[in-house]
Length: 141
Image (cartoon, rainbow, N blue to C red):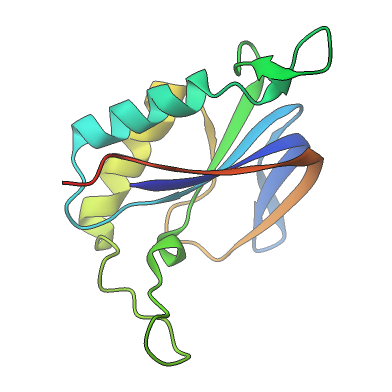
């Protein structure tokens, strides 16, 4: 499981021009699920994202975790796009929807995240809160 985590001032998701979810200050998480991922991976990764110390403390040092801030999570199978050979990404590592969706839902529930629409063509808007983007992965087997 792989998460691209961005600290944002605000973020939102729309599908077919209709607003689906929106958050204020917090984290936008793009979540990729791979074929071998388990429920335990989803829970460990959600806990890791919650504990990331990427928010400024009173001295302006990135030392604070998520706390009461919001999270918006968007499913993103393309995080497992393999471009080592050729120019067209291969997605063979990405989990099929029947495997990925329950793990995505479990991750979101554990984190208390607002959600995009799994499998939909989504428009994601965000305003970064500083240059903070972190790639977090579940332990490989």
